[in-house]
Image (cartoon, rainbow, N blue to C red):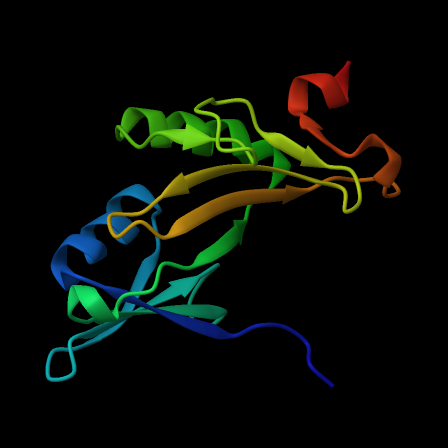
Amino acid sequence: MITGLYETHIGVRDLEAAMRFYEEVVGLQLGAIDETRRIAFYFIGGWNNAMLGLWEKPEEQIQTQHYAFEVALADLDGAIAELKKQGVPTHNFFGECTEVPTVFGWMPAVSIYFKDSDGHELEYLAKLDGDPQPERGVVPWTEWNA
């Protein structure tokens, strides 16, 4: 019955700062702003495909979240380079500061992590072709390709 996840929402301290991050760094498309409720809605993957809502809240009400944006494998290196260009540090699954993505053999998928302006844990994740290889565990992309 369920065919996907359409929308999710996160709390942010400063709506305008969060909007700049999600537009300029992540590259999401603004769908609508509700100034009265201090909410901005962003489309992921094109208009009306999936949505992220940013809700301005007092700092004590913000609970940091984790979510992953799916990217094409061919775009992952460029996404990492863009984060670096924007001054956004990246890290692997183990929290080590690096630009080398992590592979999850059980999926299989490769990803890199970074944080937004409110400390939410974001991830760019690319699905890999082929069968899952859970016996390989969670390893650096360089090791997976060796």
